[in-house]
Image (cartoon, rainbow, N blue to C red; front, top):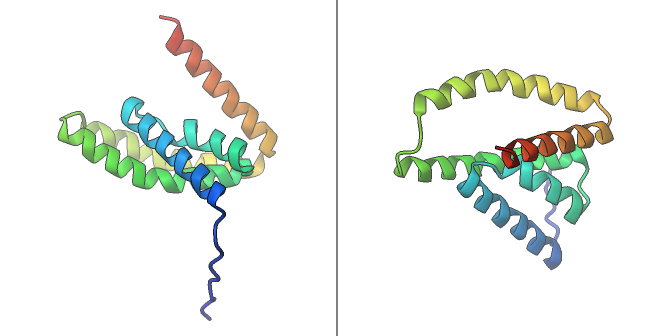
Length: 129
């Protein structure tokens, strides 16, 4: 049986926040090669009150489009190593399956804290030469 999808209008402020999050993620993706998890997830949580799991899933769906376009743009500049990308992507599939399964078993607060620790460690590593 086909389900009828009912479209509801999205409030203007929500649309603007989603556009802001997308713009920030795109800018960070193009500039630093990051944008999905490090930008979209926290902003969805703080600006739109998404839960950790919903923010993660929404971010991953957006990353598909962001990564495709960003990698094509970087490829035009000769900045893509297709062999290296494939060697990263293939085992990453197993990581996605394992990580998603783990995320579904952990309390959302624990996932948020682990994410915060990861961002903090990365910030320290980047700041200290």
